[in-house]
Image (cartoon, rainbow, N blue to C red; front, side, top):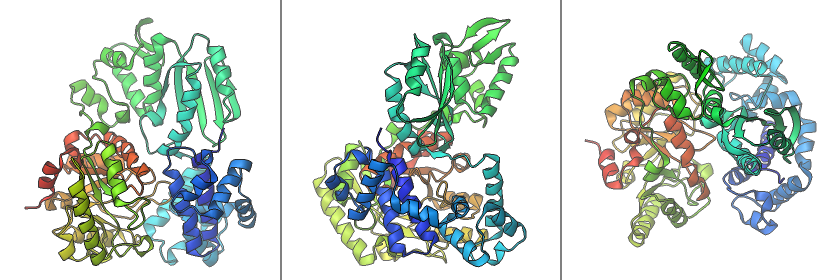
Length: 571
């Protein structure tokens, strides 16, 4: 089996992290990160490409192409092995904490000589860290929580949803040669942001043969358990996979049991007990008589409940809503009419404006907002007023030649530290919509950070707040803000918040999406695509919206441009 894109991006990002810890040149560090981002956005495996094809990819030069070939041939990168030998493993462990990252790790190492989690914990508890710049009280509290959770879980790795998909897709194709009715359950089916392991269910006329087939998968590193109905393996990527072979009459019961969260399943069992039923992974029983189990719908119906979509099975009121027949008709990927955040090679994207537009139209969209960065993000080659005016002219010309599609004139304008916007109102009023975002000064106290966004919303051209909390899954928890105030202000001002579909962000979280829905604040689902390939990440944002109970009408880009334009205009 070829080395996965996830493994390669992980190795390149690790090189970048270790170089960053050592204080190496930031251009060099960034070159590894941008290459990793390019690979992460590919749909096919990079090791199956020719050397020339690899070198033709954006942000991948001769040196990194050689490293990709090296890991494909040997499974490792000699430069990374050398860096690992020079930097203490315990320091790398610190760096992997969400609140830390390479730069904060380097500061702690240089200023306080911290080289282990225990030393970090002690320094945090003794108040030594709060004297350093960038380590506020809330950040330190979160660091201590992370360390506690890390020890509780034994340092187990979690996989982002897209990473898990890359691993699971070829596995399902392989299993399908011997196993029927294959379904992935668990947090993967609930479309959680990250997954710790994979639960797969199937049926078979020969379970023993099916299990033999499963454990012989080429990616299997270790067989933990092997039985006739259940086997567990650990793959080379570190992901644990459990396979269960169940009887057809119990398949729905097993799928229901292994999909729902623990809390959902407990509440479901209590609902059954109220009717005198016993519920388990084999079916619904009364006085040892089998009543239902073949399908999930049959199971829910027997309990007097309407069908509950997998994304909702978290015990957040869905069972009561199902009993009353009041579950929302969740937004679907086919409801999306356009994408409201995408970047081109005018700044830090990989493709031209025309290429992005054609790719969006091919996906069936009616419009695409081109939202290149503003001048504040100099590292991405952000546009100033004159450059943006030139892009507006280019879009106007392209729109004349594209039928049944519209490129929306937009920008991802930075919210500056004082809450003003990075571009003049004179140019902003020429745009179809304005996306506003924070990319700097992320360590401001909660009140100052909140007021910064609230002031930005006063600008009459402010439409959508991009990646509202600034979090990066597994890397940083985001800035400290009062989301109640921000949502209320957005609703008052006729502004909207974004659900960013980038699998590294998925920002807003499902909790905040639910809060927005309850507040009556509509949201946009955007990909923040930096290439034609990553336009396809919309599915992750839609899944996140579904987890937050959103209906089609709750999402602004389920509308035609004509209707969306009316919604964006402020009275």
